[in-house]
Length: 255
Image (cartoon, rainbow, N blue to C red):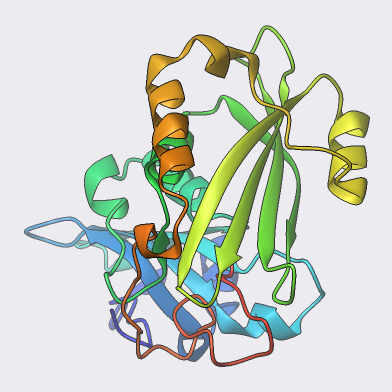
């Protein structure tokens, strides 16, 4: 991973005003690539998830990740530039997959960056990446300070019961790992009330109750309660909070 992105657009012109504005609105020096894929052999398309460091000083709570798709017309020497802001890495990856990116390469994140703490986190993120257009994002919140967390509230069009889902991501800055958990609610007001008050555990989705894999994972997590059971990620060299938790007080992974 490099600290500054190269969109590979030398000698290319934007295909329209929208692409020109989208490309010019991003400052490469503020971006740190978290996951990327470039088509081969001609490199006509690039898919990236990046952390935008400028967002850490913008409006509090705003999403800090950006999904980027660049489509190059190699004959006409023009480019189409598409972006979307996301609070969570998995939702940014899902956005790219829906726009033609192969799922496997964009799911690969550098080993020097903060890592999932457990198997359930991996499973939930895989679920989000593969969800297609099932989740309609209703609201997000990102916190750089304690509690170091990000949440995304969605409507799950595939759920017969409790269709409002909250994906809560919590960071353990001391060991550079994070967890993602899914909660289920009947209505948006109920989800927001839980987020505001935290007056009980995150309500479990109904479909989890008969899911043997989830039950086995939860049992394993219950047995593995010591700090030594949590995998530690290596320290990265990036200056983005996603990779360097020494930058700010009580920092977090910016998703």
